[in-house]
Image (tube, rainbow, N blue to C red; front, side, top):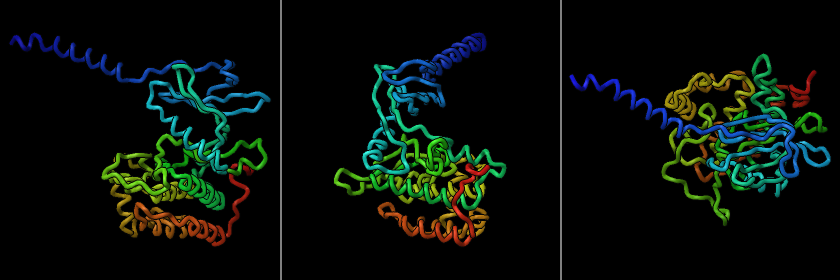
Length: 329
């Protein structure tokens, strides 16, 4: 009986302790920079994005040139450092599908920052603003070529992206001649270097945690295998199917086990799922997938063969790449 008398008090104390713990674990949103504020030699124009651990700003430098600045709080996991590392390597090599890094550093004990080329809308946003939620065939195949080029460039400098998806690609700003036709790869926080200093491939770990976005993740990622170059290309295939038809068979699935089962069916060559996956797509997409799923961890994807197949798809469909859909009146 005495236990019943104290039970409400006990549960009340537990609830208070739970709320206190939750508040400690929950990240506190810190105050960002203000519009019109001067930051070092830069002028803050406005905030164009925000997240739990940092913000993205439009800033102006000397001469009126506008750039993007990403910030990340000093007490975060500092994934911005990987962005800086990859973009420094890409900029030094003059890679065409990467924004140019302008400056990076640490601002006191408040945040890390990265200043880079300001870009336009993401492929995700451009796709979603269309009534059909997918691009025309010519634009889709053209985007397939450009996005694959970006992956090849990234692999050539020794990195895996591990989160290939439409939201991580943007076009250039339309006010710069020809740049709005260029596609740029972004967000390198999940990148991993797959080669050693001597340029040999690192040995795969026995088990690796899940990385990426479930909808586009490759099968090996669902199975906690070490990520490899072929996995970036597999994610790319799922992405270009979505850009072409908006018809990924598992687009309404959230359960990781269910997603793994669907992609296992793809890898096993089950005709029903392959028919659903590539319905309305060029047959060349399916051929590329068949090449990719045979690759092992150490194998180099045959990018040149994939480009030839994409060119063949453009001819077979009787379409042209330009103008892109967002250029049309």
